[in-house]
Image 1 (cartoon, rainbow, N blue to C red):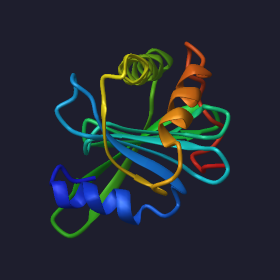
Image 2: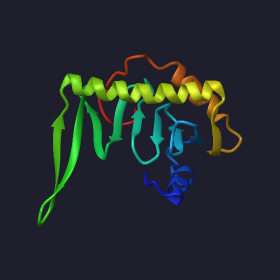
Image 3: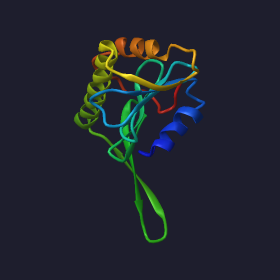
Image 4: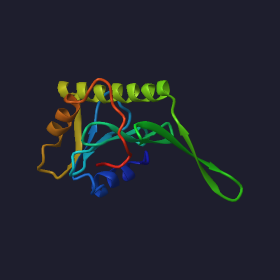
Length: 161
């Protein structure tokens, strides 16, 4: 997701796989946060362009975009995918994170999500927009975060199911 405002608006408007979504501003974040839910209950959290955390309906980490790198769940392990441009082609380098690296990434994600939960609980946020307009996306976000385990688990696969 781009840091340009027009691209954030595009995400809110065009991310139709996220059947309920909202764009929020909280005091401790420089960029707006977009949170959305797929029809099956999986959730995506976009903290500006980076980081992005995506979870399945069981609140297990399935994908992320963090510090310019793509991460995905594969057989309950986190795989990092990095593009490396060569003279003639682009290679996608795949690295399996060590247990401590994966746990560190998940602790950072949990911390970021809990800061969002605190802001929502305090009422320290502004809704920039939401789809659908009549939906109570904020309550859904609060409930989703409140039910999250203190230790995020890794999904079996990166897909949303």
